[in-house]
Image (tube, rainbow, N blue to C red; front, side, top):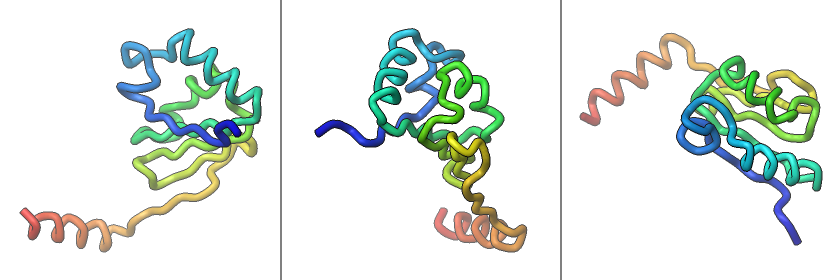
Length: 104
């Protein structure tokens, strides 16, 4: 039994010299996706920060996701839209900052 889903970070992992996906990685991803493996990119970037790489890898319209904004948003590659967004209100963000300061 093979893999059903593969996750990859972008910066420092998937991107060659921080700019583009290497030919080898691109070929491996394409081969996996063609076999039905869901490819999931995980990144701190926003969805628009990965768009050109999704096009480069021919992932748009395929089964898979992009977990972006450090996990705050999930983009559905097949549907080409945000699947979910988790945001913090200004009040909650302030509470998190205060909590972090207390821990220091």
